[in-house]
Image 1 (tube, rainbow, N blue to C red):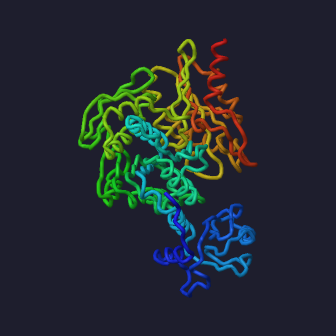
Image 2 (image 1 turned 90 degrees about the horizontal axis):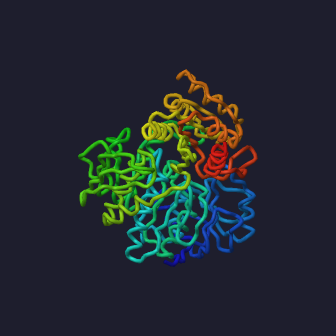
Image 3 (image 1 turned 180 degrees about the vertical axis):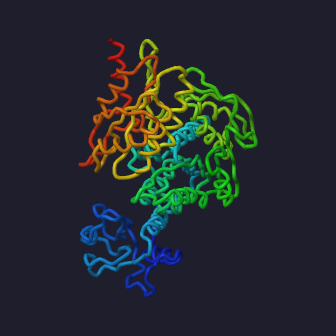
Length: 506
């Protein structure tokens, strides 16, 4: 799929059609001039670039640099003196404009793909990996290449493979990845849709074959994210406006509101563990070895399925994946194979001591909803064991997580350790003290150990046995975001293995 050669007039007319132009007067510019590149990065500008001025931290110097490198027009919510004589296309909403311009610049690549978008408060990454595993099992049978995935963990579009920077990429990056998938022949793309991406138009123009709504809880409520829960929920629901088929979880809070919103889609498919009337239904769920077995019923078949990962709550993610497979007509054998071998880095990683008396679970659970589900599952899967949980909360954003995670730990854990988890501009001790205030009503007091490596070793080596230790929040992350920016750290899984080796040596 080749990128089309477009003129400045093509981009100007797009903004005009969508009512985004902030001025009525004609643009004083050559609208027939070809646009070689659309960019928001002054370091990548080439002659013939249409430059986008976006972001709260944007500086006029960036525009000056872009003009010096060949930008011949720019799009902005206000003119900049640094732009000189270069025409300014003023818009009322630069974020929405950027999404539309990016889609046009890359030739609307999602129109040539089967794109599945997943949103929800918890489980997006796991569900994405389950869907990819199923699609890959199916496509392998036909001799096709692996499908693409854009997730919190990794960006793999068929041509580029690297750790992800954002849950949902910025518009120009996103459309480039979708075009790469088309070029590579990765006909199916599975991607996470964050509430911020939906709210600010980052995913405008992406045609979804399937939109998955997993669940909804409180998260990302802060002055710099969503001002309140209503805004967060409304942002999530926007996913249905660009989808052919909706897959909705009937077991989540506000399921009826979600289903009503999904009716804008031509087709709605439901899934559930509790409601046999759902289109995709799981029953007889039980732990089997290190995995989970359940009975799956879809409109096309009924059979037992084995989920290779532990965590009873992961059946919800497996049902979402099975619903998507139903939309695409994936054979039941490929669904079974995909679920059985699905693995997600940093999600429900399980480690055990040599004597079997101590189990360690590493998981990315980083909000109250996900931590509660994780701890309830640990209680159910390891009955009679002492339950230790270690976690922290991010600094400078998502402040609501401190209350939710504190309440979950206070209600469900026997022993609680608080430590760092991307503290950013805040002091770790201050974040932990605030979390402790939400644990205290349960009559428990957490041990605060700011250094995460030390905290992991203490959580494991000082645990009562038989016991289970949950290391939550970081998963497979290899950096800590501190005051001076990201700094390298040892991932929790490796720390857990080292601590268990020391335990075994004792």
